[in-house]
Image (cartoon, rainbow, N blue to C red; front, side, top):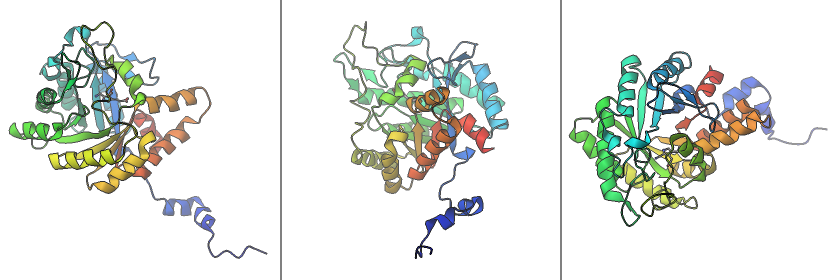
Length: 335
Ligand code: PBG
C-alpha cells in the first residue's frame, strides 16, 4: 500500500524537464564580473599563490579580455593594479596619475574592445606605501576626509580614461556622495558607482593582498601603522550595520551596492537584498576562490560542481551579480 500522502514534493523532481520548470534561481554569464590583476611588466605572470590567476601585462590583458568576451561571452571586468614600490607614497598620488597603469589599461581596453564594461577599484591600498585603503596620519589613524578627496581624484582619473563603473572599496564615510558629485561636476553623469557597501574586515582577502603586495606595511615603517583594516572595514559579527551602510550609499547615489566576501555572508546578501531596490552585487573573494581551487586540485572536491553550487547559493541569497575569479571557467561551463 502506498503511504497516504497528498503532497509528494519528489514529483516535482522526477525528471530533468520538471526540474527545469520549477528551478527558482538561474546563473548566466551576464551576471558575472571577472576581477583581474595587472602590472607594468610586459610579461604575464601566473600567480603561484592564486593558482589559475595571472598578473597581466596590459597587452596580455587585452588579449585575454578579447578571448573572454568573444569566446566566452563575459563583458564585465574589474581591474586591480600592482604598483611598483618606487611609485608608492604616503599620499598615494599615483592613484590619480593620468598616465598611470590603470588609465593606460582602460584606454587600451576601450580602444580594442569598445563593447566591454570596465570597472575600476577606487581605494588607495595599491598606491599607499603604508598599505591602507586610506591615508595614515602621524598618529597612526586613517584620515577619512582627506582620503575621500584623493578618492575623488582617483575616480575622476578613471572616468576620464573611459571607465564605465568606478567601485570604491575603501569603506570611508561619505565617499560615494563625494565621488558622485566629483563625477557630475566633470560631466561624467553616465559613469556608475558600484559601492563596496558592506565590506567586512575579512581574513579571506589574504591571497589578494599577496598578489598585489598591498597588505598593511607595519614592519620597518617609521610610523605606527594599524596592522588590520578594522577601523574602516566592517566587523564580521554585524548585519544591521550593513543595512545602515546600504541606506547611506543609496542616499549618496550608489547605482549598485555590494556585499563582500560572499559565501560566509549570505545572510548579509539576503538582508541587503530585502532592504534596497538597488541591484546587489556579491564578491566571491580570493580566499573563497582558493578554498575551492585547493580542494579541487587535491582531488578532494569536484571543481565544476562545487563552484557552480557556490555561485548558485550566492544568487539564491539575493545577489543580482557576482564578482568571481572563476568567471571564465563558469562561462565556458554555461556555454
Ligand atoms: C582593496 C581591495 C581588497 C579586495 C578588493 N579590493 C583587499 C582589501 O580590502 O584588503 C579583496 C579582493 C579579494 O580578496 O579577492 N581595497
